[in-house]
Amino acid sequence: MIHPAKPPQDAPTGEHLEKLRSEAQDHVRQLRQRINRLGHDEISLILSGARSHYAWTDRPVTDETLRELYDIVKMGATSMNSSPARFVFVRSPEGREKLMKSLKPTNVAKVATAPVTVIIAHDLEFWKHLPFLFPHEDRRPHFEGKPEHAADTAYRNATLQGAYLMIAARALGLDVGAMSGFSNAIVDEEFFAGTTLRSNFLCNLGYADEGALFHKLPRFDFDDVCSFA
Picture 1 (tube, rainbow, N blue to C red):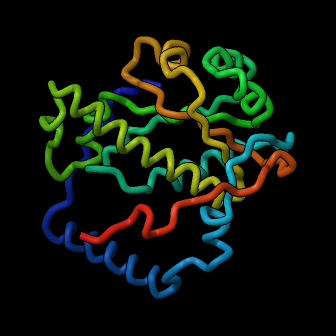
Picture 2 (cartoon, rainbow, N blue to C red):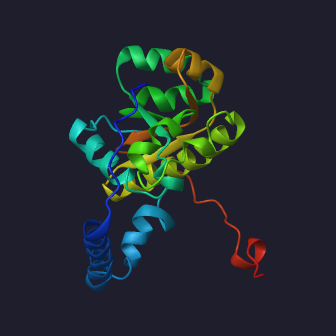
């Protein structure tokens, strides 16, 4: 899971930069002309009507689907394009055995029956990859020698990427069930010992057995939690 930093990318300049900027702007304009918002059913599929699932069918999740999922997730926005999230797709008997050590008893069955459980983690030394990810200027001095700032940035942005993963999975027809009922310390020891990776949360992926669902729980209204300033 720890890979050497990719070589720096040459930042485009001059006419090349202007061409790339123009193409990016045209792409967004054309996209908005084709579709300016999702419909009710699409929004319901990914958020408003979606549910967290706890029971699963035995239908497998293919490698191709997981790769397609990541190719969507990686395009989600992060600060300075830092992309600190690291994803471990646990599905082998050996991986499950290690993961089971960390779980609270009520979560064992959820993981045991899920086709895939994703460990959403973050790399505390994500900033070493910034010359590749953000070639316009060297942002490594913002983080080098500042472990608290690096950890805070990594955690915040990887959490965003974990949310992107959940929404993207639903968009691809998968069901999801995020979990926090586990020991991060045990996961880190079992999967990331001796590395700069740290776990954040877990998420089961697969095709759900809806028979385990209960009624949808209440949510706050706009005026309960929103304000204008």
